[in-house]
Image 1 (cartoon, helix red, strand yellow):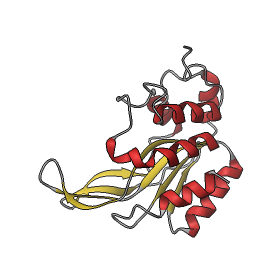
Image 2 (image 1 turned 135 degrees about the horizontal axis):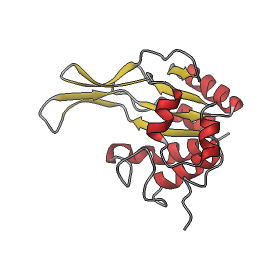
Image 3 (image 1 turned 180 degrees about the vertical axis):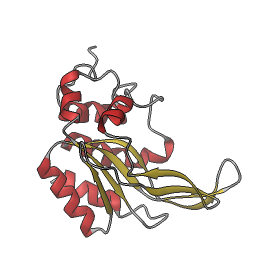
Image 4 (image 1 turned 90 degrees about the vertical axis):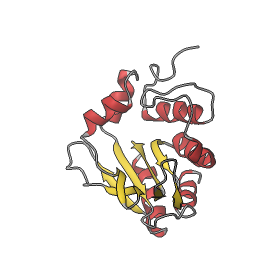
Length: 186
């Protein structure tokens, strides 16, 4: 079987490959060290795969989780969040509109633009452990997430928008995902 990542010529091709990885038809993707999504995101796979097929190639996500005792004994909480790449301006406008209606924070990082400082999305005992929205720059982010991808797709990613959507309410997991589904399946 041909390597769908190496053969990708567009962001849309990457979206199809990412959807196939999320659904278990491809064993790996270049920017992730595991063969499947984290267990906490399994319920998000249909939404993420649909978004990828529509042209919003998601690369990181997590559900909103209410405070709970974690593996290390600390109290953990999470905000629902997703980020990824989008080259289709009309789809970007639809996602922005739906996210805005749902009161979801929208962060766009364009090539050459100054990066957003980021927003905390995971805490353990009040200590921030993860933030989203900040990027080290397009080229660096592309090289870390898309090693081994076809050069034509890389070229298109360099002109794409890195889009992050964050539900600012800790623990809520029922607002971001319906908004993303509505924007990417109509």
